[in-house]
Length: 75
Image 1 (spheres, helix red, strand yellow):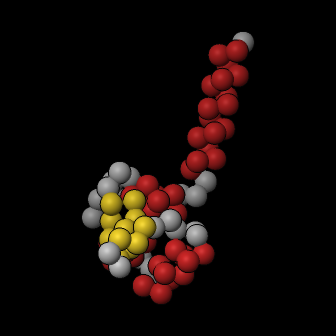
Image 2 (tube, helix red, strand yellow):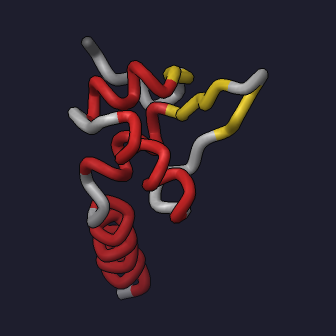
Image 3 (cartoon, rainbow, N blue to C red):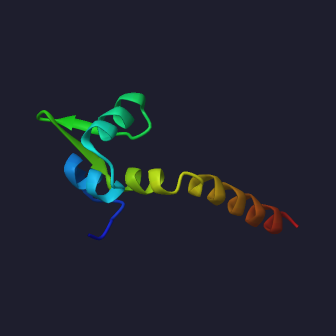
């Protein structure tokens, strides 16, 4: 299964991608670790959220690289 950050996944698809159980999925959503929307009694997760869970340091790395680029441009 390919993971697209702009695609919307069901809770079952997200569980399969993350290799977690239903109870773990619900616990992550309840604690706010995984952001999901409940639509019609079913959870939907954006692919970008799944990627964020898999690589939680990625946004921080982007900030570091961006700052380095800005510093070089200012010189």
